[in-house]
Amino acid sequence: MEIKEITVIGANGALGVGVSAIFASFGDVKVNMISRSMEKSVIAIEKAGNSVKALKVCGNMKPYTYENLEECLKRSDYVIETIVEDLSEKEKIHEKINKYLRKGAISSSVTSGISINTLANCYSEENKKNFMGIHFFNPPYSLPLCELIPADVTDKTVLREMKEYLTEVLFRKVIVVEDKPAFLANRIGFQFINQAMQYAEQYKQNGGIDYIDTILGKFTGRNMSPLETADFVGLDVHKAIVDNIYENTNDYAHETFKLPNYVLDLIEDGRYGVKSGEGLYRNQDEVYDINTEEYRKKVNYKIDFIDKVIEKFKIGEYEEGLESILSDKSAEAEICSRFLIDYVLYSLSTSKNIAENISDCDIAMAEGFNWIPPIALLEFIGEERFKKIAKKYYNTKFIEEVIVKNLKSNYQYEKFLKAKR
Image (cartoon, rainbow, N blue to C red):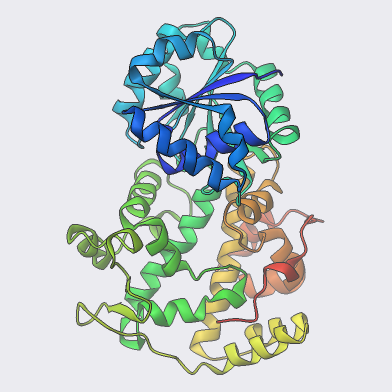
């Protein structure tokens, strides 16, 4: 596949900037950046250059507005829409793309969950064969995962060539997934996060939000604890993702996607997290107390098993650190163990149903979330021991169906386990 010129629509948004930068730098292609005003496009070009730490690539990017849409589309090999996650707005844009798209050109919507088959209906029979969804993770320069989502009518050769281009030219870690709500990485990641929100409500007498975040801290294989992650993403964005999954799927973990009432209350008050200044947390030292509905100072919880794990991880004794979690009988260690089990099982079962390969869940979580890959975690725990622990929560038949024999990870678990709370 040869791509010399592309058009990015909605180029001034965070993903528009990031996607433009990736194509302009790694792909060395001409990028037409379309925003609602020339000023926004000019600013976007500067941001794009800074995002890849190479201002010289700015020469590959040209600023335009929607008034230039037709001329840009008629000379582009590839058109990428990155506007707001709203189906009706995206449909309007793709109807325009279909009108001006040059013959043989490819088009995509950058989305984290909107139906690709629905958007494909905006295109003619000929053009829809070259249409697919593409989900970059933000920021693309740091998170190389790219989910490709074909519509039912997407040409398989075009899909294969696009996967090769993204992999070999743009250095993306590409997985092909079905057109299912939230696709793969977000489906797994937001299940974990939303279940943590539910546990915070369940254990609100013990401390709630910061209590659960402590139990599921960095030592469990993620750079940021799950409820801090929700604040970083935005509670409104989190709601949109889990609502979509809850309303349009019905797997065994369906109820874990139901958003707790206290989160709904925060969203209604405009407390979305980092972008609004307060959400589950406020500043760096305050947390929302679900009981009192007020903010309070975060607590430095004294939890023995966590101290033991971190002590072992610091000196590279990972197996001993894991043992400190799995053999501890405290309520906190039980919660931690349950989440590790659920994470692996949900990742594997979802990947089995949505992705080309069951092992794609490892790529999704390592490269899109920077979380410990689930198969690597399974190998770390050990298949037989994992099954033994899992039987406390799930029936044997389900576990045997999900845990495919001789699963192997291409990732090392050690790099994801932090000697930190």
